[in-house]
Amino acid sequence: DTGVSQNPRHKITKRGQNVTFRCDPISEHNRLYWYRQTLGQGPEFLTYFQNEAQLEKSRLLSDRFSAERPKGSFSTLEIQRTEQGDSAMYLCASSSWDRGDGNQPQHFGDGTRLSIL
Amino acid sequence: LAKTTQPISMDSYEGQEVNITCSHNNIATNDYITWYQQFPSQGPRFIIQGYKTKVTNEVASLFIPADRKSSTLSLPRVSLSDTAVYYCLVGENNDMRFGAGTRLTVKP
Image 1: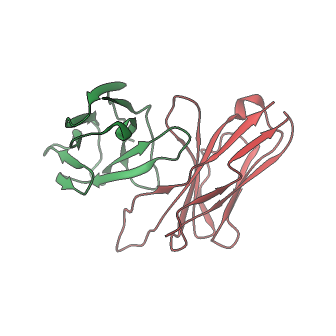
Image 2 (image 1 turned 45 degrees about the horizontal axis):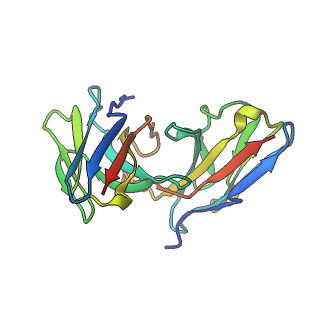
């Protein structure tokens, strides 16, 4: 179990640029989640996938945010036309799910910290 | 969705037992109770999960009364390295809503 891996760990960019983050989940996990965390707050859920299907995306923060998981393995989160308010930690988590086991806990990566200049 | 309420901060000393209580008055029948620990610049780490009564693992115990409207995370004999933020979550694992958590400070 190598854990959830996120890259890059830090990203600094200018306002208006597009950024993309990558998440590699625990290999046997079929669910993958994205969160945003600002200083002093708990993580805020954004979206999640089961295999390649995006099952919830209504809580993405705006239409500038999008996520993909094309082959049901790694995922990318893209933010277009970044704004200063997008500065935050972006966390990825994964879990296993099937009808028999049901509710398995999520395992988190250590996040990508985005700073908008 | 059930909202959780937990103390903003707690202080303790090394070697003491720490109990952090979380209120979740409108917990739903299918909801589990899950606790996470988070250190600065790291992602949350799963501690323990339960549905009812008591659950114990190698690092913590979780006590859940019969009405399930609250839960208590118990950390035995804390050390300085247990200084962290602790989150209580209620719900299905595909729809977790974190609050601000409890900042635990362990002093020597």
